[in-house]
Image (tube, rainbow, N blue to C red):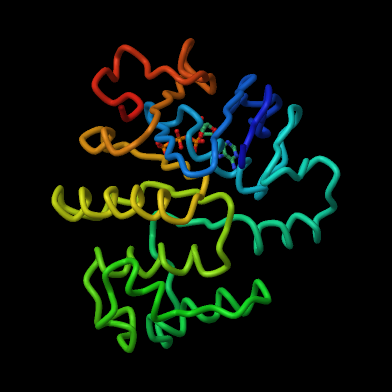
Length: 235
Ligand SMILES: Nc1ncnc2c1ncn2[C@@H]1O[C@H](COP(=O)(O)OP(=O)(O)OP(=O)(O)O)[C@@H](O)[C@H]1O
């Protein structure tokens, strides 16, 4: 098990009170598997990802990343855990404009204190011939691929991906989902992908639905919600 959330509750300040964004959420993601997280806007998907990424500390519950209970960690230790064990792909590829694709990947590795092989990683995402290009010389889909390569630079145990296809057309979106699937298989990451796009869910081992801050009944186990039938675990 590379990622587990147990009975996680998260609230935000809301006027005089608190808004409950996550309400007793439990989710376990094994190494080498992909879990897609779907649900209506405002249901808590990004909050779930932020908690899993240790960017936000829940009010209660346990978050264990690669065997490390994050409750025991101070701020600096969390940052170190994030830099070494967690890869995050944000919705907008926030690449550094002046750096080539290879340099973006290399920089991430350097921050984690590891030597990377940027060209191998770029080849793994289908960009072997684009290592020397800067972000403005790449298409949206290619930028997202660099984003994914960069998130993998330090060989993370957990890969968290937020809306990877929102800026892409159907075909490019399908390619990105297929890529995430393959990389998860090859690198053994515990991968969580938040998505609005339900057309590629067959690429996931499991689909969970967040509604009003809760995982839908039956969605926290290995089964796929009936509402999302056809998207269940691979045979
Ligand atoms: N920093 C914050 N402060 C206060 N409330 C917040 C904050 N971030 C999110 N919320 C609220 O928490 C709830 C869950 O938000 P979240 O962003 O997790 O939902 P989501 O499912 O990712 O939405 P979307 O699909 O629209 O991105 C929403 O009601 C949102 O308004």
